[in-house]
Length: 124
Image (tube, rainbow, N blue to C red; front, side):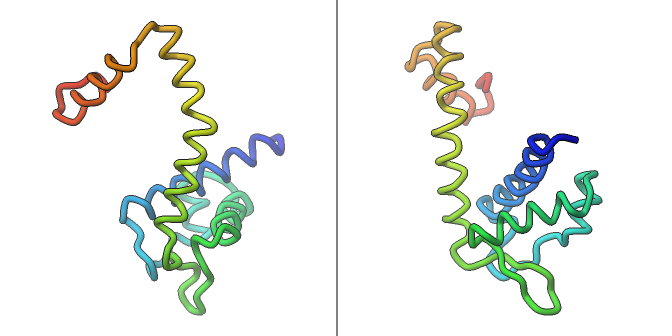
């Protein structure tokens, strides 16, 4: 497996954990799944899961806690939300904008589609 593929895999694991932190499923002080648990759940090697943990630790979202493994750090939700938001703005939003232009979907139509999605009647 190439280094780029491995990087994408561990980053995907880290991003899924960040989403759990942002949506409140994992709160400050909560234990996150261990490297071994992540590896088994994601079907990856322990070293790939360890890279995901290291990424979260390096960004300050988790910390090691003696006897518990790693736990969610105070302020992690805001940190993760900010990271995911910036990644969306820099990476996904330009792709979405190109797709909207290609499909001739106006801003007003997009807002309508997004509004409908909140009622369960939308297409998004």
